[in-house]
Length: 389
Image 1 (spheres, rainbow, N blue to C red):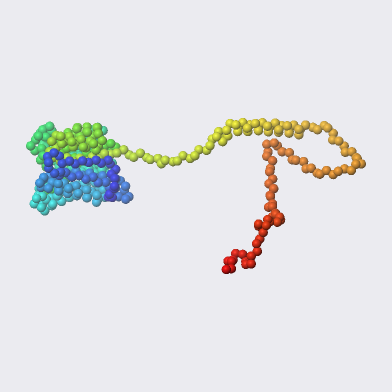
Image 2: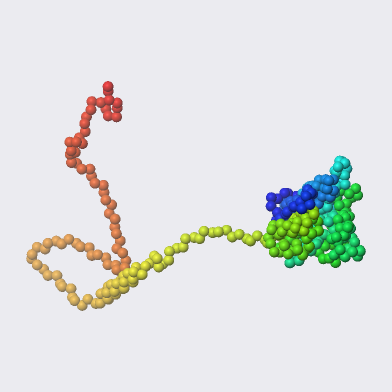
């Protein structure tokens, strides 16, 4: 896969050491990728690990778990997510065990983990221990993973009731974790409903997410002290980042006996299509602006005058001339020749008379004598040369 700068899901996370005074042995990581250059499908991997061992370096085990799982998933092609998650968790267990055996002070260390891998809109999960994954959808909360604890096994077998689990002496006995000398068995069950069996739950891998869905990964420092319904109420009533802080505060108010880590992934609405802004073209001036009222009136007046003039001309052309032309008379007086006058051609009044442009010839140079001030002065050497010394 190819690393991506931004996740396609909204991501929020918080980690707090709690109120017991011990160091924070929780670790978490969120990484974003694309499946490849040709496959632009985005993916987000979230991992939460809770270290076991205290003075036996539980924080080292949690760090190894987060690094190993993130590394193996990032190096894959993302085409077989269930098998990749299985192998990543098994490899993390081996590395923790080898690190514990290499140094006496680290022997016995281990970690729980919960992993959620979202490829596009499909969810894949794996878990080991009592770190949990929740799905908040349509105002309800669902625990998708199963705790690997003595308490959970006792509840499933009917030995105790769920309400008796908090104060039971075996409340924190872990039955499965990373770092055991025996190969760990990753839990790939994804419980959409509480009544599903193991095989049906594994078939839910690749569960489709919807807009508004929220995934919550957390360590048992939260779930030991805050009920599921309280988690749901806080997630609904406040922005996600503020809701996580309120969950941590509530756990600390009630004792905060363990580290508290929460990672939230929320499916955002699709981005709204952006419409490029186009600068409007300048509007052509309206006819009202080009032709004010007084110009329209003037044009109408000219039109009427043209009709009158045209009608008069037509009437004079059609009216017969009954006056006989005078006959020429002979006279003995000398007749003075009159210049021949060419009659003007008549044309309609509304046709402009063509204007003939007569070229203006350049005026001749004046032959007048220049004033004495402008008379040429003759010098004993040619012009445009340096004067002799």
